[in-house]
Image (cartoon, rainbow, N blue to C red; front, side):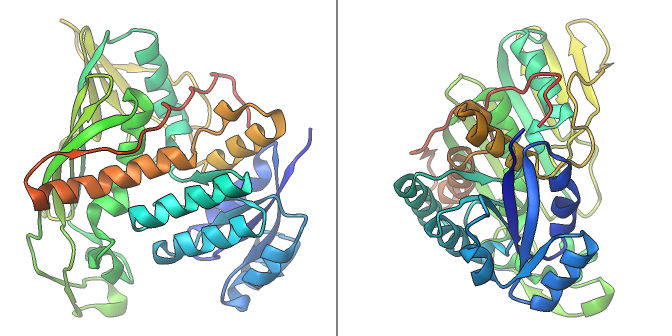
Length: 364
């Protein structure tokens, strides 16, 4: 079986799980990593037995690399993705695709011009948990999906993160931090979004860092930290999504539930790959459902493997965590903020295909 050679740009915390997982996928071979800090790249290369520790420019110039995984900070996602594409390589980027809609569109336009693929995290919707939910919906277990609720509610990253300032700057906040997981899962289960509306608020204009590194330092909050949104899907389903860093007392709300004409489905945390999956038919109690699909553990990189499968087989449906899906999610996230600011619905300009389900026995 042929493999696609992979290089990683960005050797920070998130890189470790990619470097661990990529060699385990059938279609991928990790041959290089790069960082603006050459020492960090060298350390990761030694830790994970990666043949080459490069500068970013050296990695882009290596003609043997087919796919580059972009794990840089969100502020430079677009810049690095475009550099990769202009170097003639396919690119897969950590979420979000870009910070602005304009940057996201530019990435897609350059990729189309170059004849290359763009992929983007999250790929958690390809894990056993959400793929099981997709199969249950497709097989009619809950009838026609009518509605959904989704909640990502916590008290904010200043309580644990060593450098939480970004999460409260423009381009941060709970929607752009965690919204991609929830919105991608909803699109994977219900299809593309027609319009959104929402209300946003900055509940606490200043935050105090609680983690040890910067304990006591103040953060001026520049972006909404509580976003309550409503989504209308082309399928006719309506969903409620709340993302918040302002819930200081905790919550018992589920991550995601889908409500159908014949029952309800409880979807697992979309930041993870596994379960549990629960179903409740009319007149019965909640019951656990065994996962029908594999990839139940942390399988970050699964979307890259699916991209490689598409390149090798020519089956474009295999490229599930694709740029069009990621841009659709990016536009929706901005749409909630725009709707709150304007006091009206935001009508989506983009669309995407509902990702093709994985086969239960799929091996990537």
